[in-house]
Image 1 (cartoon, rainbow over the protein chains, first blue to last red):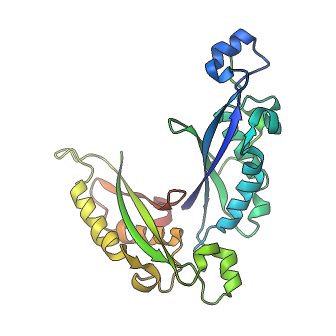
Image 2 (image 1 turned 90 degrees about the horizontal axis):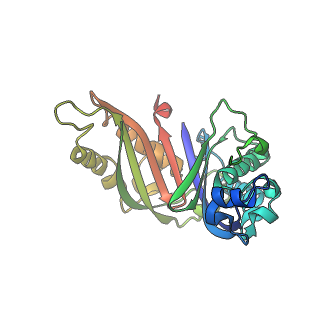
Image 3 (image 1 turned 135 degrees about the vertical axis):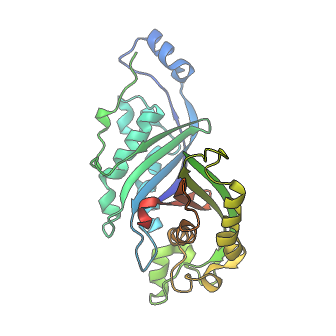
Length: 158
Length: 139
């Protein structure tokens, strides 16, 4: 088994706030992350794919295709944006890094085959650092279908 | 228990398939296909899985592991042009995946003991790209 991991970076702002909670509850749950004007991070995104090395080319996939996938489906929508306002999934979903990871996994897996029609490689993991002190990782196993539904993700309970 | 030892080497390479055209090589490998070749500071992380020896308390003597990495990988590859100087890369394209696979091949038989075995080779081509070769691949 060979797994390739490519690192990408984007900066974005967000505010952790749930309409399901009162002002006081939002403050209690999210603390300074609930400050009304939001704040930003330099996110580091690691995308992992697993597959066979092609005997001739020595590649699992063309890196340019992986870059095009991540740039088109994620970075173009997330980088230099306010996640709450500018990324459709976060209209209602709180943009915690857990949820950002789930949304990115869903976006990548939904159109995976369009970018790699020649390869059986699969998305095997996503890891995001919100800062260099915290990171969030999703392992995507063989058994789990590629589509990850964002509406099944967990919103922080009060 | 897993233990990991890190080592570095710098080497040059070029990713090209000779039977393909210039354009086809560029489409596959991008700038990595430029015929002059270029270099990377590779970082190698070798992970063993095992149990501490009941007497020494060690999974494997790290001094010995360091010597094996040095002899099998670092000396042959450091400051070399992989395509010209390090077989099988005269015939096999030295992509990060293939270099990681070759390192696995060189180390797997040397890193087997009563209490441990090679579990993973992780090779960074740079800070933003790495390949893992794990036990299943060797079977």
